[in-house]
Image: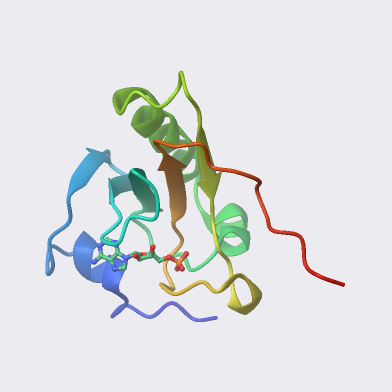
Length: 122
Ligand code: AMP
């Protein structure tokens, strides 16, 4: 899928709409999800124009890849999530119900998160 520069996270990166920032460096930004699904729900995004993890992992620079990974760790440590634990999750494409077409990693924490995926009834 081609990158749409009008997606909501691109607008956040351009400063056209606000975000509740948690962490930022040259290549990544982390901010609180606007509709948190757990007591702590943070999104980590690369600053570059990437739709999905398969795209990002194939075409991003080593600095971008390192920054994205390190940003997740910064959020976990800075928000005190390490002791009780947290979950990271990225939706990619239609079957995953990805809503915003700019790569983002969800960080969920602040409660017992239950099983990872609800088994499908067969
Ligand atoms: P996904 O379904 O994985 O694409 O998740 C998109 C996430 O972006 C959802 O959890 C939304 O609540 C969140 N979201 C949408 N708009 C904003 C915004 N302006 N600021 C922060 N989070 C947002």
